[in-house]
Length: 97
Image 1 (spheres, rainbow, N blue to C red):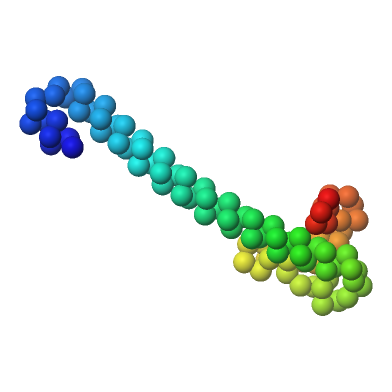
Image 2 (cartoon, rainbow, N blue to C red):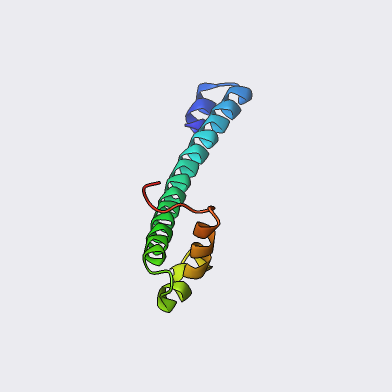
């Protein structure tokens, strides 16, 4: 497109503006796609954490649940015991609340 504008005799300033507009459009598309991917990751992680919280609320003394990672991929340092503590402290609500 820039070559076409140059052949047409379009001034440099107009060509530069078209180039900038195309760059902004391309970056916007890439940003939207990346944001969608990140939102999907976060929703999946939130679902796993909520499921782990629900399980540990149902059986708060189960050592397997208390030592299990809530989401091994995105929050490997958060255990079921951490979720239970956050729930009991009123910092984390179970599903449906």
